[in-house]
Every structure is written in C-alpha cells, then in structure tokens.
Image: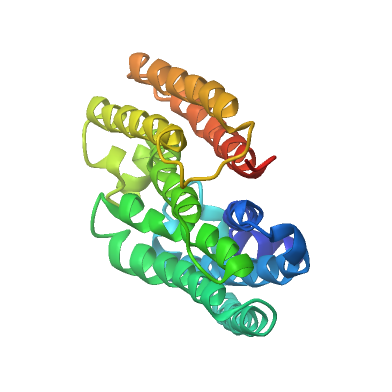
Length: 286
C-alpha cells in the first residue's frame, strides 16, 4: 500500500481545503503572528482528522463508490482486507489528531476539529448522504469547523470574524458540489444517492445552483455592513472580482442547458474562488 493509495482514500483534496480554511481562521485572529508556532500542530491535527474522516467515509461508501465512475478506482484499494488496514490507519490518525490538538494547541480548537470529523463521518456520510437531497447542504457544515479551530488556536475563543469565515465555506459548498454533480447525474442515479441534480429536473437543479450562488455573492458583502467582521484591505476588490466571475460562469452554465458540461467549468473555478476569498480575508488584516 503506497502513498498514492493513502492520499486517494483519505481524500487529500478535501484535506487541503480544510487546511486553507484553518489557516484563514488562524491568521485572521489578532495576535496570530505571536502564536505562529501553534500553526504547525494545528494543521497537523486538522490534517490527521480530515484524512481519517475521508478514510472512514470511503470505507462506509464502498458499495456505492464501486457503482460510480468518479470513485470506482477506490475499489482496488478497499477490498475486505484493504478496508481493515485502512480502518486501523484512520483510527490511529484520529487518536493522533486528538493528542496533538490537546497537547500542542488547546481544548477548544481540538473540539472544533473533532466536530468537523464527526459532522463529515456521522452527519453527512452515515445520516444524510443516502437519505436526502439536503445531504451536501446540511453536511457542508463539516467544512466550517476548521475556521473556528484556527481562530480558537490563537485566542481560545470564537468571534464574528471566525463565524463569518465558517459560514462562508458553508454557503459556498452547495454551489461547488452541485456544479460537479450536475455532470454526474447518471453516476448518482446508478448509486442510488439522492444528490440534488439526480432527483429534480436539470433546469430546476441549475436554478438552485444559481440561487445559492446569488446568496453566496450577497454574503461576501456582509463585512461592508458588519464592523465586527475584520477582513484584509484587499478583501473588497478581490470579492467583487471573484463574485462577478462566479455569477457569470454559473449563469452561463444555466443558460446553456441541456448541455451540462459548462457546470464543470463553474466547479473548477469555485475552487479558485474560495481560495482567493479566503486569502483576502486575512491578507493585510484591517
């Protein structure tokens, strides 16, 4: 079992997002420059918990992943023997995450890391994913906790800014994932997963993506009206530019139905969108 297999089963792309969100929460907190040594154990604890959650997710979803083109390769790693080994790895990772968090960071940050793990594994994977089209909406809360953990690692508290970052990721998630799912409708149908685009018409699903994106764009403007949200000096111009591109791409995809391929363009851009927005939150914090 090589490094490539571990990265695939532990969903390294999600771990990267988790770490970016945690860094944003950390660097947005006053006094973070004086606590920079805490950033490494925070990221280590967060990465271990995220990778553990990804492995548990893949083990639980072995049956449906094998029926989807996007995830079918995982069956080569997760046979009955491989799944037992990965289960052991995930358990050790989670235990190590808790130890690192408690010993090198603090209790509150560790609690948020564990809430992120629990919401992804139990709330999203076990409870929601196979039962409701609200799966990615409610389950998206898992991506919010790293922001709270990052802020708490510095201040051992929660703030308007930390909550703002957390909710930003929460609202961004449906636009991001539904844009991907628009092109994978047949995959979700064959796996029996009620992801939104597979349970409503394409036009209606596209409308939901557009509506959620409009809410997301409106949300990014809140720092203009709520002074308790502290953002960097580059935030407003960055947000306006990225919002314009995001709305344009989703609207273009919506207008070009029934050709769903344009939603993949919106999906890929949504990654850059969130990255730029997050960096601009803490870059030269006001």
